[in-house]
Length: 123
Image (cartoon, rainbow, N blue to C red):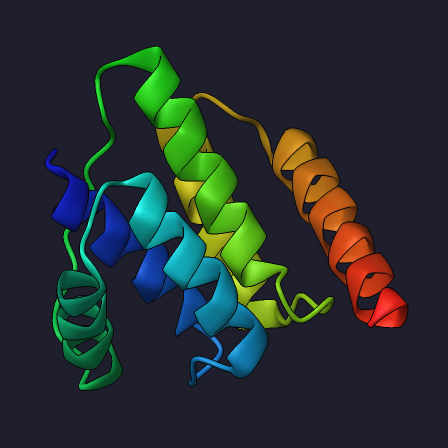
């Protein structure tokens, strides 16, 4: 799975609630940079995802890449400090593909949402 495909999956996760908000967009920009994407590549993928482009869910075979990708998915879904039902369902469906059970996924989401709320209060 190349960096653009991994980023596309993270961007798709951000859109599961129907839109990509400002908080999610900021997390996505950081994720794009972590994947080594240029600003133009990041913007192109975001435009594709916002138009509803199909996204294949592939899990990286490398454990480190798998862990980083899932963390980024969780971070972007929790970026606004709230996890809605569509976001929860999406991440729970992905969890087993990444070797995580439902409780582990919920714990990660809860922690990421609390951290996002804490960052928002500091601003």
